[in-house]
Image (tube, rainbow, N blue to C red; front, side, top):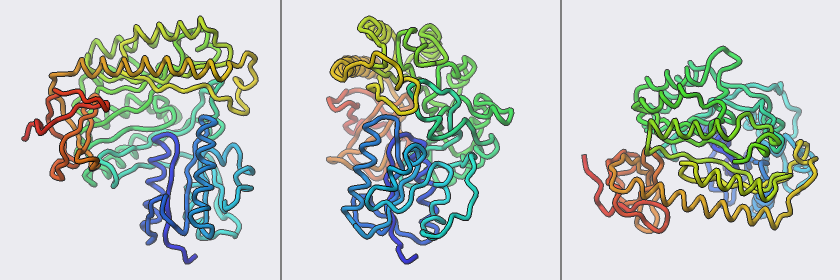
Amino acid sequence: MNSRTIAFHHFGCKVNFAEESYLSRQFLDKGYELRDFHQSSDIYVISTCVVTAVAEKKCRAAIRQAHKQNPEAKIAVIGCFPELKPEELRQMEGVDLVLGHTAKFHLLEELENLGRPSHFEIKEEFIPSYSWGDRTRSFLKIQDGCDYFCTYCTIPFARGRSRSDTIGNVLKNAGEIARHGVHEIVLTGVNIGDFGKQGGESFFGLIKELDKVNGIDRIRISSIEPDLLRDEIIEFVAGSGKFLPHFHIPLQSGCNKILKAMHRKYDCELYQNSIRKIKSLMPFACIAADVIVGFPGETEDDFDETLNFIQHLDISYLHVFTYSKRDNTVAAKMAEMIPEKIRKQRSEKLHALSCNKKQIFYLQNQGRQVNVLFESDHTDGYMHGFSENYIRVKTRYNPALVNTIQPVLLLNPDPDGCYIDELKTITR
C-alpha cells in the first residue's frame, strides 16, 4: 500500500476519542502522516456514533465530505454504526472498509491488506486505549460495553456486553501517561462503575490504587450510573488529593414512572440522596446530569415532575437529549410516541433550566481560589483551562502557562460562560 497520509474524525463519547487516539498512534508508528479531516488525505477514518438519529446523520455527512474532498481516497467507517447497519454503510459511495468495535483495532492491518480476506479472529474482548499528545488531559478507557439494556439504548447491541481492563494494566497505562507529561486523567468507559466485575475487582478498588500513581496530579471520573455511585466512592473522592470534585451522573428522568419504563436501575430518591451526599462533603463540587425528554408515554404531568425535581436538585448543569427512536430497542415498539414539536418545547425548557443552574453554580464560586490546568488553545488572544470543579477560566495567552496548573482567583464571570482572569493568575 503506497498511501501514507491519514485523517481521523470521531463522533460521540470520550471512549471513541480515546480509541481514535490509540489507533492514530499505530499509524504514526508505521510512518503515516496525520492530516486534519478537512484536508485532502489518502485515507479517511470515521469513528461513528448511533446514540441518536442526528448522530447517524452526521456520520453519513462526514463520509460524503471525505469522498468529496478526495474521490480517490480510501474511507474506513468504524465503531457503533458498522455494528448496527453494516450493509447500509457498505453501499455508500466511497466506503471501502466497514469495521465494528472489535475489528476496528485491526484497522492498520485491514487497510494495508485491503481486498484480501481478513486473517484475524473477531471476538469480544477489552482493548485498552488512552489519548495523549494533543491535550493537557488524557482520556483513559477502563471499561467497555454494557449489560443494562435500557429500553431506549442501542449501546449494548453496538458495543457488546460489559467488560473491563484489570487494575494492574490500568495502573501501567496511567504510569505511561504520566511519563508523557500529562497532568490530568479522565477515566472513561461505557459503564465505568461496572469495572472489574468479571475478574473479581471493583471500581472502588481501582480508584484507591490510582490515587497512589506518581506523576498524575488530577483524576476525573466520567459518567457513572447512579446505582453504582456508592457512598464509599463519594467519601473517597472527598478525601483524595488527586480525584476531583466533579461528577457526571445520568438522571434521564425525574419521574419514577418514566425511569421504570426506561428500565433504569434506580429511582429519584436514590439519585437525590447521592447528590446530597456529594454536596455535604464537597459543597463546591460540579455535578452534571443527562436527561432525556419526550420518552414514549411521557405526559405533560410526567415532564412537569421532571422539571420540578431538577429545579430543586443541587446540580450544576444538564446534558439534554431529545428522545430519538432507535431500531431494535424496546422503546421503539412502545405506543404513545411524543410529537416532535412537544419534544422540542420540553427540550428548550430544560436547556433554559440548565443555563440557570450553571449561572448559579458559577456565582457560588465567585471569590474562591481554584487551581486551573491551562490548555494550549489560542483564541482571540486568550487561552482556557478548567478548575478542579470544572469551571472554565480564560486568561491572556501566555505559552509559559500551557499544561501548567495555576492558582486563580474567580473574580469576573464572563458572558461567554467562563471566568475571565485578566492577568490575576497567582504566580508560584
